[in-house]
Structures are given as structure tokens and as C-alpha cells.
Image (cartoon, rainbow, N blue to C red):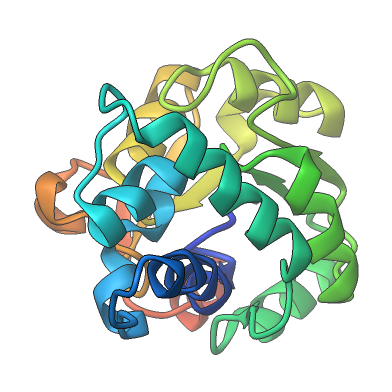
Length: 210
């Protein structure tokens, strides 16, 4: 069982939003509520600077502001971040059944490992955005996870809250599970439009599916 991180396994939006709001305060802007940030949180700095400042990667201000954002996030990477409701029970159920589980995320290893440690998690593998030359939806990170776990891709389920998660799973030959509790990008429609093998509204539904 493999999980996307931001928006699927862990609710990282409060800390990501705090980093955005810190930069907004320096520019004399009012803070954004976490619900305004949440739909863009899975897109990383690209999405967060878009919602926070209306910037896109081609804008001249994007690169320096991205560096400032990452530096601020690095300072407070796991203050309010927590597992989504029901996720601890799902992980316990997997471990009770001796089902290996891991994380496949586009998030940098600069942040992921520290958050995993602070949340007290013990995944059997962690594949980050800098673990391979490619980001999801490219299947390379998925292949690396399966190789690390020592299982065939067809034996893996991958849970994610973004269209690219479903695309990556399908490209790698894994079962795709779209989750409805995460950071649903408004540009991608809803999880039920992504042609996932399964769509779930809560982690407990995976326990039943097992």
C-alpha cells in the first residue's frame, strides 16, 4: 500500500499556509485562511505562490519568492501538520496484516523525512521528488517504491488526492485509489472523474476493501 503524502497521508496545509502568510505579511498583505490554501497545497511552491501572490513560474518574482517560501517552511516544517482522521487506524491495520506500506511523494526529501519522523511513522519505503530524475505523474517514482519493497507493481495500491497520482499509478501498472478528503486541485475536476480503480471518502474504506 503506497500513499501520496501531502493531502493524502498527512494534512500539511496549515504549515504550508503559514509559510505563505509569513511572506504575505512582509508585503503588507492580509493572511489567507487555511481553506483558501488547501486546494493548492498538493501543487507545492508552484501552487502556493499562485494562490498567495498570483505568481506563475515564468514570472520574474517567482524564483526568489520560491526560495524565501522554502526557507520559511524549512524553519517550521511540522508545527500543525498531522495525519488525516482515520489514517493512523489504517496504518495500524496494514501493519497488523503484515502489509508493507510506503510513501511516494513529489515533496523534497529535505522536508519529507523530518515530517515522517516527527509524526512517528515507520514506512517501509519513502520515495521523494528528488529520489528519481522524474516527478509524478511519471511512473519512475512508483517503480522505485515497488523495487524497494521487493514486490511487483501489480501487487501495489497507490492512494492519492490528485489526478497525477492516478496517472502515475496507472502508468506503473498499480491499482489507483483516488481519495476525496485531500487537496483537490480545482483545475482537475473531482476524484470521480479521474478513472481511478477505486474512489474512497475515508481511510476506513480501504480497511473494508482489504
